[in-house]
Image 1 (tube, rainbow, N blue to C red):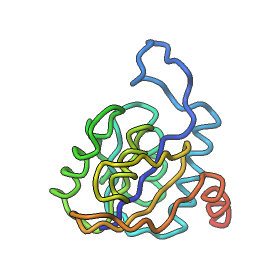
Image 2: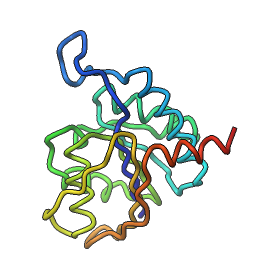
Image 3: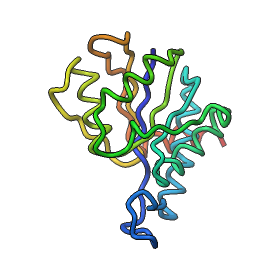
Image 4: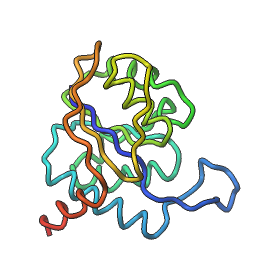
Length: 164
């Protein structure tokens, strides 16, 4: 299975409600999320579903990707991608669902712990992702995953610019 990890784009420091879960993307974050989504689509990934954290900024990052990949109907949310959750929770979910490829959209430090867990095969290290960066892994559902790409947002945006 291909696993694609996407960290949310830049978000406001504080929401009007004061709740972390309600923080929205900034104007620049929205622009970057659209550019990254175009770049991701340019790669023609084998993604057949998208799972996002229920936090507003993750959902706002996932929606442009869903549009560009024509997967609007395959976008779901999972609390297993919320900050502070055990990375094993989302791995259990995607293992149970199966499929060819999944895009997981979430937060740091959770995604860094998940990436480290996948690369090491056990919870040992953290490999942080910058905002709107993407990691691509091949995983057999058991042991370590093969890290195939680690793409910063600016590279994905440049790839996406070639689609226009």
